[in-house]
Length: 267
Ligand SMILES: [Zn+2]
Image 1 (cartoon, protein in one colour):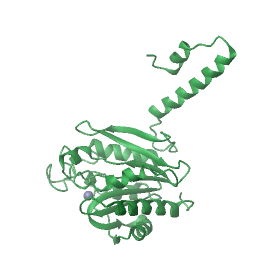
Image 2 (cartoon, helix red, strand yellow; image 1 turned 90 degrees about the vertical axis):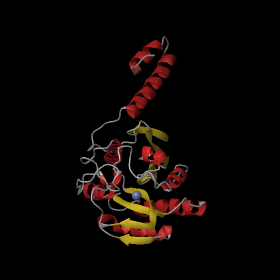
Image 3 (spheres, helix red, strand yellow; image 1 turned 90 degrees about the horizontal axis):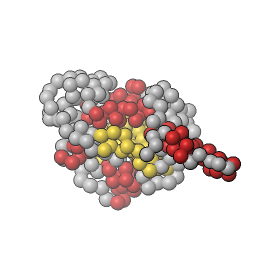
Image 4 (cartoon, helix red, strand yellow; image 1 turned 120 degrees about the vertical axis):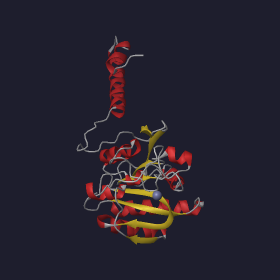
């Protein structure tokens, strides 16, 4: 198999003008494909869409499980990132993520159903190395403890593959809104610049709003300090799995908040 667009195009070298036009289209398509596979890694560059729809493989977990992002909604809409699961024993948000992946209008939705597939497979809060992935971010990170402690933050910030995958995706997308699903407190937890967004979400989802500072080393702590124009908060779903009505409410809350943010100062 040829490995470059030029190589493949050469195999189809046109002998007539009509073929030449076809070839140009083919080359353009291949270049677009190559851009999708090898997008710019510069964090400061404008976040160009890297996949029109469907699934994008972001990397692999410690145990080699794929971590993917699904894209849905409307690419012209407000960019929203949803993380369905980060603690492996808190997987109810995966159903919300899957439902959001079927939305075809509204915001530009980027969905990571499961950022901790190893923990989810094992039924553990931590990843395969015993690290709490929501304590492994650099903002107010504090070391200590040992693997498999409940809040073990890892040996250093971003020591874990899964955390780095999440960070890199956020830096690439620079979403206007990020929703992190957890369990089992049944409330919406927001602080600082994300407080207003959290309140809107809580009202739409009919959940209690919990106004409280971020914990050390959490993803929301990092996002609120590094991307201040980007709302990012935690939705603590109730225990157990969600009913279809509960899933719909969460989906509607995401869509309503995204709609409220659309066209706002920092959109
Ligand atoms: Zn959690």
